[in-house]
Length: 282
Image 1 (cartoon, helix red, strand yellow):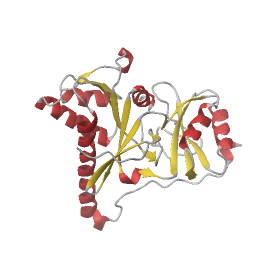
Image 2 (cartoon, rainbow, N blue to C red):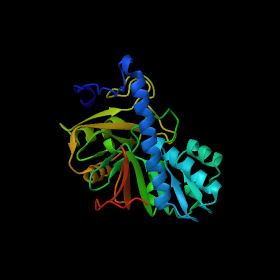
Image 3 (cartoon, rainbow, N blue to C red):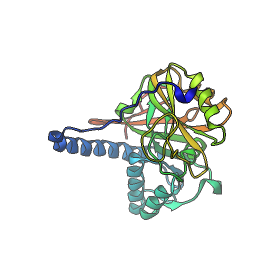
């Protein structure tokens, strides 16, 4: 029943399609990197102190923050930093810039973590991660989420367009591979009329079943993309509902943490806490 319901392809955001705008789009992309770097730099300057254990997240902005953190260590303006990386790639980049690495399993208390977010809910600062493509056999977003949730505080580094009132789009949900259709049907029934449920493929076109080659994470799980076509009123409630479904291992919603949003926009960076007050830039 679930697999036969009418589905509509979700168009990918193809930025800068018209060939005549290639130069303008390249300039825009460069400007975006500059804004993200400003946000990444402020994140390190504002929150990271010598002697801290720092969770190192994933994404473009997090990569810039790792680079800048390494610069400050080399300058000697920060010392004694231990990084807990969210992926093998992140660990490699951190080591290259001189950050001492530990693992989350080794048990250090993470004082602070930073990461990118796919989108953040205005006011609550609940965030969604895990929308990005991963390859078959790669770890899921569980490690990144675990680092963020175990940190004393976390900063999500984002572009202004990702800070929204009424989250739409995909919520990635990690599920057990056995009886996955039953899990997908229960999720589909729960959000009927508000969302579509697709199993993520490893290759080829996305669709309800994930095609002949569904994505299997390193942990042996499938990923469902629960694609909300109407705004979510309460991201935390969606997280709670998903956690009550048999077969759901985890999801890409991060809430109930001491969170800050470091928001990059043209000409300024704002840091918001959960009370939506602006912390003065320093």
